[in-house]
Length: 485
Ligand code: NAI
Image 1 (tube, rainbow, N blue to C red):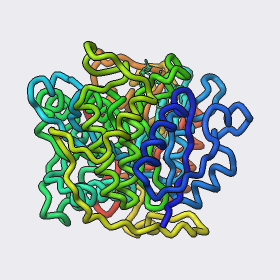
Image 2 (tube, helix red, strand yellow):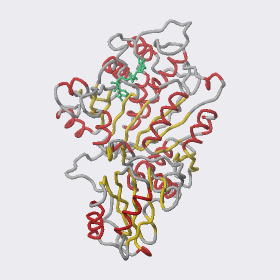
Image 3 (cartoon, rainbow, N blue to C red):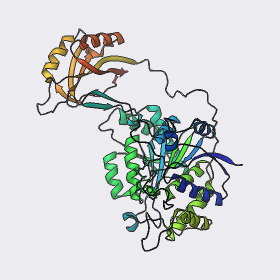
């Protein structure tokens, strides 16, 4: 039976490398039917602000698989990257990138005989990538960082399931929960809960800066690593560097219904149209797609042909042994095709075929709500007002205290998250944006109207940029303390 997939060739070198990869797929007799759609620069230029035609969106939503080349986001037109839009719109919550030592691709580690075989699973939707940013004074910009229990669980569960399927031994959580106790703290808490369901896999966690240091000194110590979005973005490019650069790194964006497979490098405008680009990253992403579709044996056959080709010294101009002349994109693909069926000497892929693929039911009428209704144990116990001022902390405190009531007291004033009142240091530099925290005595619960009244009163004395309600769940404070509080 033929499986239909959506293909978007992309911009710059995209069409050249996609053509090369599809030629390899066709030579390997894959049971695939390709439906080509328009996405990227040409579509932006036509006036579609999300970078994809309605037909492209409809095709992807009906087939569930998108295989894409790199795409250009026009600069200065206020449009958002089609790559990010696609990942977020279709909830491809797990970005899975496998980094392995490849014969013929020399790195400091390959020369030292250290084998790299690391899979980074990066959360793909949340964190600061929501792009929810505000200027709250002319000089102060803030970003919201979303970490949710459900979003974390989706990606962490994916990491454990994937690790189990591919026979990995260990899953590590990279995080910064020592500083961001509520956001990264929640990610780590969910990791530990999910890990308990997989006793057959080792699990541990590591602070992300320590992780980076260990990755560049002992990459062979790691197996599968799961991280939040921004940290995962940085750590995955670091890992690409360990195996020879972005040209050798595949990328899968996995969702429950729709998944996207893409090269991680960009459109390489400097070499576009010259037929010299390296198609390896896109080919490796295509192999991840084949595995996802259950075409395990074909994926292994093509991967071994690629490894054999690299091992025999065939290379495009961007890598490899400079004493051997480079080949162009077409001839690189031809070499892989002629090596189908051959086994590389090093790191040959084992023939495993115990993977079960369940075609997704793509009929869906409504958005899925992941969360339950809010907890009954929730109460409001205060509010943070963020105000604009260039006054000294003591002056702010003097005015703000006028708005205290029998139940609500001013407890701290902060500047960039550091307490500057009632105690603090004159050596803390200030910007024109303060946080004034009011809390109730003994955590007495407040009504939303109490906050509204305090807002009205405070607004007579201050320019309020924003406010944040202080919640408690049961007896647990659901907000961070100020630095120094
Ligand atoms: P880039 O990855 O396109 O190029 C960086 C350097 O790597 C260039 O010297 C290029 O020639 C080289 N290079 C990249 N891929 C190569 C390949 N397959 N073979 C040989 N050499 C290769 O990054 P850059 O220049 O920052 O971005 C160019 C455009 O690509 C921008 O419009 C950007 O928005 C877009 N982009 C798209 C991505 C996607 O579609 N997922 C990801 C990153 C950038």
